[in-house]
Length: 465
Image (tube, rainbow, N blue to C red; front, top):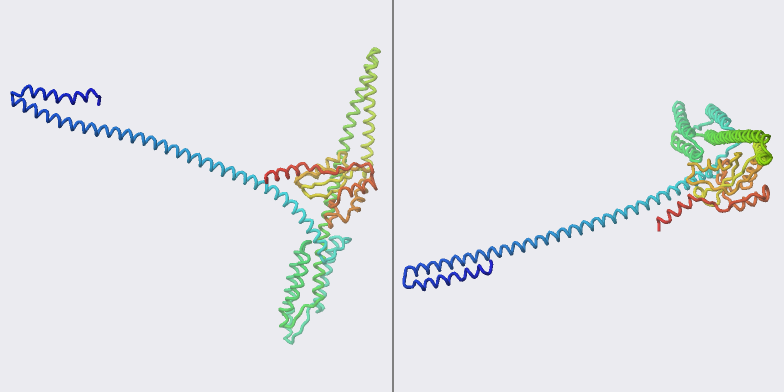
C-alpha cells in the first residue's frame, strides 16, 4: 500500500472527530458520528489484518517460488552431475573392456601361433615315437602287398595249428562233448577279440595292440582254467605275427602313398619347369623376330639415307645386333637347361615364425625363376613366409641336394620320413660344407628378415606393456 494512501486512511478519523466537535450541540448527530467512527476503526482493523495476511501470503509465495526455482536448479544440477558421472563411468568401463578385448585378441593370436608350432612339434614327436618306441620291426624292402601275402600265410598257419590240436591244451576229465564246447568257446573268444584288435591296428597304436592281445590271451586262460582248457603259446605267437603283418602293411602303405605323392609333386614340378622353359623360348623367339624386323627396316632406311643419317642407322643396327647376341646367349642357356634335366638350384631357407631358430629346409628346384618355388612353399599351409639364406646353382642339383642331406642326416627333424627336408643345424655349418666341398662363391644371408613374424612379435609386446 502506498504511503499517501496510508496517510489518508489515518487522517480520515481526525476529520470525523472534528465534525463531532462541530456538532456537539446536536446529540443525535454526535452519536451517529461516534458510531460511524467505531465502525470505521473496526473495518479498518480488519482491512489491515487482511492486507497483512495477503502481504504475508505474497511474501511466502515469492519465497516459496524462489526456493522452488532453486530446488529445481539444484535438482537439474544434481541430475546433470549424476548423468555426467554415469557417462564417464560407462566410458571408462567401455574403454577398459575394449582394452581388455584387444589384449585378449592379441593373446589369442599369439596362442594360435604357439598352437600351430606345438602341433607341428607334436606331429614330429609322434612320428619319432613310432620309429623309436615301437618294438615291431618293419622290413622296408617288402611292399604292402607282400605284407598282405604274409598275413594270409599266417592265417593258414593258424588254421593248421587249430586243426592239429596244437592251439588248446586240455586238462579235464569232463565228458568229451563238454570239453569240445569249452575248446570252441575259448577259441571263439580269443579269435574274436584278436581279430578286432588286428583290424584296428595303425602305425600309432601297435604297442597297445600287442599288449591287448597278450592280455586277452592271459585273461581267457584264467577264466577257463576251472574248465580245464588253456590256449597254447604257439597260437599267441601266430596272432602276434598276424598283427605284425597288418602293422607292416599299414606302414608300407603310408610309405608308398608318400612316395606316390612325391612322384606326383615331382611330375608337377617338372611340368611347371617345362612350361616355364616353353614360355621363355616363346618370349625369346618373339623378341628375336622383333629385333630382326627392326634391323631389316633400318637396313632399308640406310640405303635411302644420306651420309649423316647413315651413321645413325648404322649405330642403331649395331645396338640391335648386340641385343640379338645377348638373346642368342639366353636361348643357349634355356636350351641347355631343357636338355640338362639335372641342372637347377639348391636352396637353403628358414621360417623362424613356424619352426623356430636354427631349423632350415634344404631343397632343390629346376625352375628358371627359383623364387617362384619359394613363394609356393610360403603358401597358406604356414603362418609366415620363408626367408632365403642361399640359392646355389648347380649343373647337378639333385646330387648336391643329396650330398647335403647325407651330411646332416643325423640332424633331421623327421627321422622317419626322409622326404621331409628340414634339419636342425646352424647356418654356419651349412655354409662351411657348401663352400668347402661344392661352391666357394656362394653368398649366404646370415640373418633372416622374417618381417611379418617380427612385426607380429612387436605388436604383441606393445599390447602387453
